[in-house]
Length: 233
Image (tube, rainbow, N blue to C red; front, top):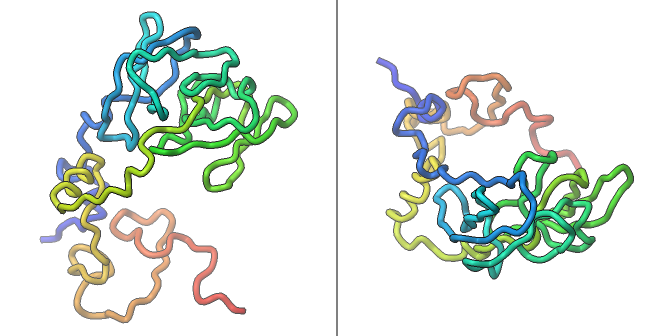
């Protein structure tokens, strides 16, 4: 009787290959209210690389990535034009050269970009029609609407990846909390039942071009590459 290979089993989403719901119980977003808010707690979330801030404004509570030097009881301003660390402003009110994070792609979506620990982007310059150029940490430029909201500052937790795990057990539980396949094994070292590249025979590795709509078990190798082979000089 046949058996699902690992990529098929993960795509199917059994209990073995499913992330714990508790890991994603905190959702980062922006409130619809404006005014003065207070940081009431700093939390650890397994689903996020950076610590999270639990913030209260009036009777509404929301979560945002923590910025450097944040502390419990600190007041932050939502709206206005005061570009102070932790404040949440519209992009059109942020001066050029400011460090920002948790950027909205579309006004009101709650923040989608630059949310990793230690991350930040820079407001470069304004364009016509209420558009602004944002310079990402990868030197890539992104154009966003001036009505998109951003958080001022740099996300806390920089250098998180510099500390080694030391033990395989800690790495196992860290990867399990995010539903990541670990440890990763080379495909040609697997058995044929575990991967299309597996088995002891046929070790002469050739590139395989998979169809874009191939099922999970066959979607391995190059996924519709523009070109293959060695580049001609």
